[in-house]
Amino acid sequence: MNRSQELFEKGLQALREDEPVRALAYFERALSIEPAPLVKSYLAYCIARERGQVSQAIALCEEAISGEGDNPLHYLNLGRVYLIKKDKVKAIQTFRAGLKYGTHPEIIAELERLGTRKPPVIPFLRRKNPVNKYLGLILSRLGLR
Image 1 (cartoon, rainbow, N blue to C red):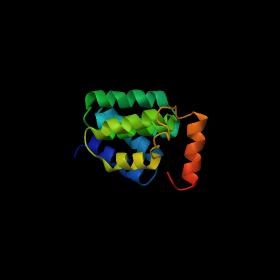
Image 2 (cartoon, rainbow, N blue to C red):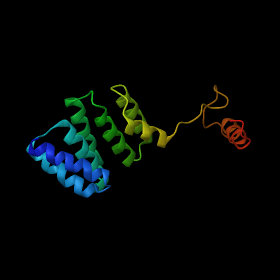
Image 3 (cartoon, rainbow, N blue to C red):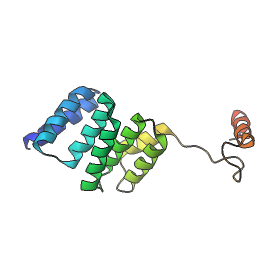
Image 4 (spheres, one colour):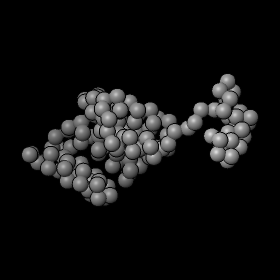
């Protein structure tokens, strides 16, 4: 195992221990040694989470995806960056795109945590239509939906 991989593994361990600042330092050092797509992806997530640099993180994730587009971990990290950006729709789309390249338990967990919406009660009306909205609330409270 080379030095870059060692640092990357330490960064992953720090993330598992919920220490993103420490992970960020490991990923930055690993990237300076070898600019691997997976390192870029995890570094992007840490940058967004700790520094709030979401646009830079998105660019790094997209760079990782262009280098290794069939790895679901890149989509996991990009989706998490979108969640930090408070863009739930894009996050869900990204997580689902990642599932096309293989089922990953963390992506599935993120999607389950976000939940899914039920279809509108009256499908030909828009979701925001007051009839749909209040009918859905009433049926939900009655336990019929």
